[in-house]
Length: 154
Image (cartoon, rainbow, N blue to C red; front, side):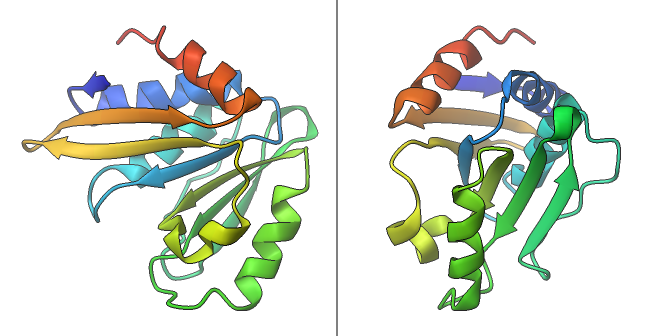
């Protein structure tokens, strides 16, 4: 469990994650609306070499960003979808691309196509700005990433 005291530290933690990414990783974010998922993604993007403004894909469902070293970041938000339809096909294609890091929110809708090897970060609010992050990994890449994340210091 990692304690995040405020939004700035959440973004710093995200930057730390972004600096570790090599392409092909899948990160699932779990948390209620307003938990800080997009804030974390903004930090990840900055650490991953993305200079443009990161917006929540709540209404567009997905957003794609150019990252460092010819890599990509694809951010999905399935909150508004009861059935993923064609977005499940797009996600399946994205998951096969080892030059793309995939981050998804509200992944329950597409859980049957998510890879076993993914890092799940569950964000639990504790007060106005404080958050607890629980990390769970389930494969080689994600276990390696998780192990390095526990070295984060704010």
